[in-house]
Structures are given as structure tokens and as C-alpha cells.
Image 1 (spheres, rainbow, N blue to C red):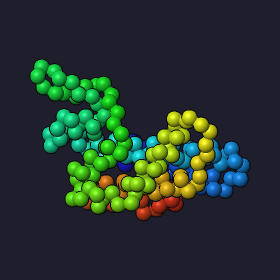
Image 2: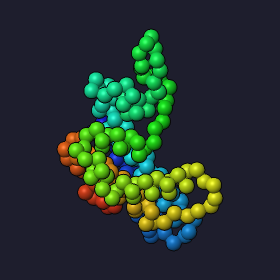
Image 3: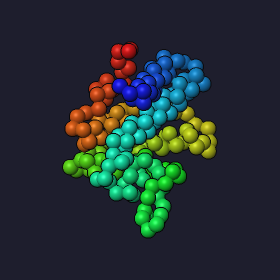
Amino acid sequence: MSEFEAYSSELLTSAKKFLTEAKVNDLKAEKQRLLRSALTHVFFFLEAQLNYLASHFAKSADFSVVERSLLTERDIALVKGRFVLTDKTKFYRMEDRIEFLLARFSADLEASKSTWFSDLTSSIKVRNRLVHPKEAHSISEAEVEKALLAVLACLSEMYIAIFGKKFPPAALGLHIGPET
């Protein structure tokens, strides 16, 4: 396991531990701190996994410069009559990157999105409310659980499409699993 894969795994474990701690905490402020930590860590984990998956194809000649731009989150420029990737960052919506990879590798994009995609979309809205606050709000255990399960289902579907096998940590669901 590479250092990056270990880091990614640690993010997932942290999200699950924060959720577990939140479930047994009766202090409202502390519970919210733990739920916010769990939610942000699960999205850190998803971003790390998306970048890991994209890294497999970032230099592939099978992908156009536009597709590699999306995979690497790098901007495109016209240089001497050719489009090339630049070092300038260009961010794409997480949902767009996920849908691109699924559309590229799965036989049926809509079937591969199943119910997890709408759960992921609603979880992204919860995350956005948290990281771009315009008013005070609380998040619930159910919202964090839904986000965690949607992320795991998303990655499992992406692994099936790309590698032909499920994402192994998805089998644990919300459980942390054995400590390594």
C-alpha cells in the first residue's frame, strides 16, 4: 500500500471514528463538532479516492486533453496551435468527475448511479452548507451516515466499472473494521 493509499484509508477511518464518537456524545456542541468532522473527513476521503483513480489515466493517450484536464484538475491552453495542459489549477465539480469516470468505464451510466448518486448529491449539499455557511445550522447523525454510505457505494460502483471489482472497504459499511 502506497503512502497516499494509507493516508486515504486513514481519512475514512477518521470519518467513521468521529461518527461513532458523536453517537455516544450527549453534549450538543461536542456532538456537532464530531459530526462536522466526520462529514468533512468522508469528503476528504472521496476526493483522495477520486484523485487516486484519476491518476491511473492522467497520462494515458486514450484520453483527450480535455478529459485529462478533468482528471488532473489542470487548465488547458493553446500553445503553438495545440491544446495542452498547464500547471494552472482548474477545479471541476466532484459530481462531474464521478460521472465522467462512470460514463467512460461503465456499460450503463444511469444503472451504475443507482440510488447512491442522489444520496451523494444531497450529502454534497449538506457539506456545502457546512463549508460555506450563510446561517447557523446543525447536521444530524443520519445525514453523516447517509454521506458515508453514499461515498462507499459511489467508490464501489467506480471500482466495479474501472477495475471489475467492488471497493473492498465498502463491505464494512459504517463499521471501522480491524485496527492495523
